Length: 188
Image (cartoon, rainbow, N blue to C red):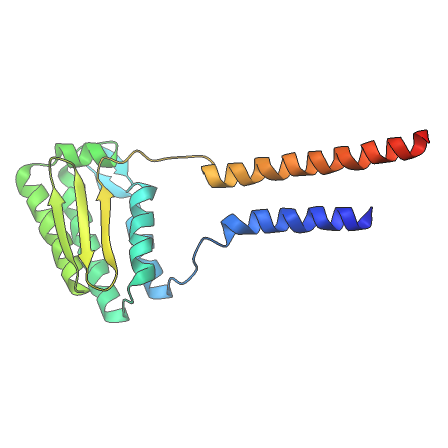
């Protein structure tokens, strides 16, 4: 019985560590400042909005592949603050709405600031206004595409949910086998 319970515990540990181990923790303290600045709310003329988590995660994936030094981080943080300052006159209650409501001159200014920030680390930033995407291309880190109109997802991700369901089913199946074998042993 102890061996079976130990096996169940090990299987559950492996299943749950499979999705938690996939989250890389190689972001430096300086790089985390960039993620924190992007995660902070953005003031608009009628409230605040945030950049969708999916876009922040894309930036995190970029930073995991690209080393950014303290000087570059300081410059990028200044560019993020410059871009946020430009949006204070734009109305919107979501990131996509702010983008849609931006006058052409303001949008151009924000794009230019973002391009300058990308140049700091040797990357190229391009914008597809029709598809509402921003693409960052870096010779070292690859290409990343951010969706400006992304819908913020909430709740448990599919992988985490599936791992939890699989663990519960596995635990139930093993429990059934244990109780069934015990019942058979007792009936003899």
